[in-house]
Amino acid sequence: MRVSELRLLDIINIEDGRRLGPMIDLDLDLEKGFIKGIVILVASRGKGFFGGGRDNDVFIPWDKVIKIGVDVILVDGREIKL
Image (cartoon, rainbow, N blue to C red; front, side, top):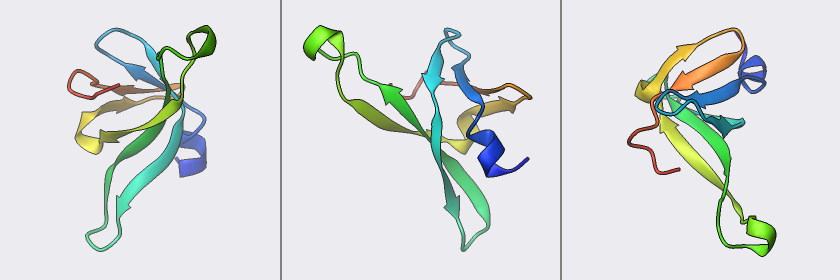
């Protein structure tokens, strides 16, 4: 699977089944040759006009990625500030 294909998958939190947002980046350690994590874009639920707020980038460590499937990426978001 290519990174461009990963970006098309939904990111789902296994804790509550909620869709978190699209993957916007993959964090790599090029010196050691491994994936550190993924960066997703999460819509804020702040007190902006009509309830909308700024979107936030959230880093999810690679060890919190549970499964990469055909349609979704399942992550354990219990300890991640969303």
